[in-house]
Amino acid sequence: MLICDEVTSALDVVVQASILELLESLRRSLGMTMLFISHDLAVVRAISDKVVVMRQGAIREVGDADQLFSHPTDGYTRELLRAVPDLRADDYPPVKHRLAPIPEGAG
Image (cartoon, rainbow, N blue to C red; front, top):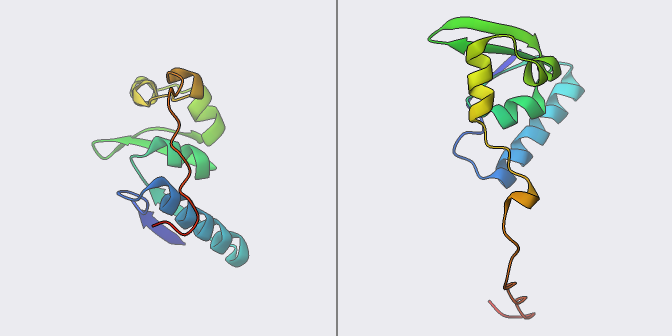
């Protein structure tokens, strides 16, 4: 068993994705179990089979990740999920000016 405590915190999304892909590859090739401890619910949702929601050291809800994220039963879990921004492309105004590509050999 590998315990990963906030393994992706403070990393940009590209590095985060690389770390998560590496861990998933190791999990599959070695057949190991991983325990992720994280406050990043987007990461939790992307990588987890089962989720345990805790508050002040007490377990509030346990369940299959898909079920828990789509139909939480505990009020605290519902509050947490409501606090996560749901960013979609149509949430942003259209870009008025695109950046010009960097010419070859520049930089």
